[in-house]
Amino acid sequence: MTQELDLPFRSASDLTIALKRRQIGARELLDLYWSRVERLNPALNAIIVDDIENARKRADDADAALSRGDHVGPLFGLPMTVKESFNLEGTPTTWGVPAHKNAIAADNAETVSRLFGAGANIFGKTNVPLYLADWQTFNEIYGTTNNPWDVTRGPGGSSGGAAAALAAGLTGLELGSDIGASIRNPAHYCGVYGHKPTYGLVSYAGHALPGMVSDPDISVAGPLARSARDLDLAMSVLSGPGPIDRRGMQAGLAPPRHQRIADFRVAVLLSDEMAEADQSVQDAIARLADFLGKQGAKVVENARPDIDPSRAHQVYISLLRAATSRRQTDAEFEENSKRVPGLAADDMSYEAHMLRAYVMSHREWLGWNEERHRMRLKWEAFFQDYDVLLCPAATTSAFPHNQEGERWERMVKVNGKDQPGTDQMFWAGYSCCFYLPGTVAPIGFCDENLPIGVQIVGPQFGDRTCIELAKLIEREYHAYTPPPGWA
Image 1 (tube, rainbow, N blue to C red):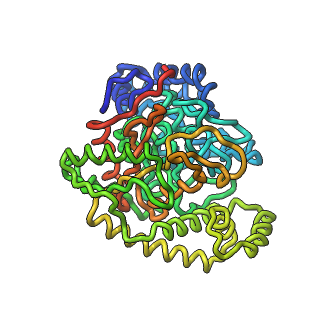
Image 2: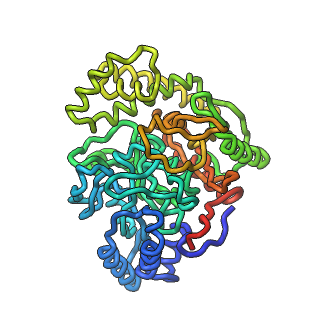
Image 3: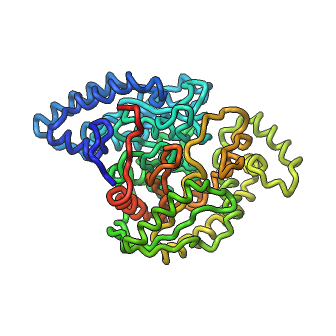
């Protein structure tokens, strides 16, 4: 349940109210956060780029505007950071790739412009893994980011720096991206909130490797925060088509289906053979489901769409790795093309799926895409009977740093057994491959006092339904808790 928090740990919603009421000044709040960054960030390495001098000028201008009685936006004066992969004029956009170390953004991403337009004061950028392609956050340019709940563990990825900075009270709000749970798993690992929007709902312009401008398949931009209320606030600013599309298109967020727990129809999926969830994760979600049922919600366990989970995962990995294949050099493409014919036909490993997707023909891609859209219709039918699906965001709580070998070679312990770290991407793709929104909300802790979150999946464009249930859970069951030792 919500609690009174010290100022740096308060929600963005509360901070903007305090700013508008002049209970604190914009420069005063910025200086508070920056002093914490200077003191605490070295142990986390979450914020890796700063624009503090420009931010100070913006804060002074905000204070002057408020003293004149000028109209202010919904994020007026709020100090915040954004993921390194978003263009912020005058700062590096590298995606953790050494070859792009000196790539300086000439302008702002569309999402960054919208945040500035709403009055936010962006003072820095947060760390990412190489190519945004890991559930840990480390790269050769900026180094390793630690989890504030246990610095020997990772904060997740690829929005790992974002979640760590929020959890430790170093920033007021964050902007992340998600193609493989890159908003959702860091929120889960760090005990904060994250929302992966419906595909296409938020403009992706200005979030790309240097030299690229086209939007990738599956990937989205969305907020991370210390309160579900902040997700609503941020989405009201971020939602909408990009600069060209908005000449003829509008995107409005549909209202939530319900505003009382008792009215929700809740499907619950605790685990799956494709990615067994640790018992600690299953138990936390089961306890939440029991609470919701006692509050009057219709709760049904093991309900799911009429889709083969293993086939859905194959579709996701194939389309995911096709979407990320454009980062290959010509030489890498030629090498991968030579390797694929040597793969056994029954090799369904993550590496084999990835290699095939990297070099697949467009005709093959069209087949996978057709299958995706058939499954999409199954999800639509499912959400005629249910409002949301509760499921894991990942198979475990945050795991110890492990940077050796390839991702599929690194193991995590699940119920005492080794599980390839890439298996848990099942919980990423089960919803996002099919364009569905997903909100992660903290719901408790495991025996090691590490946060556990729940993933709330909703129908396409049902973003506010997911967020609304997260708000109800926050208010009546469990809310963000600051990690110890970061006061």
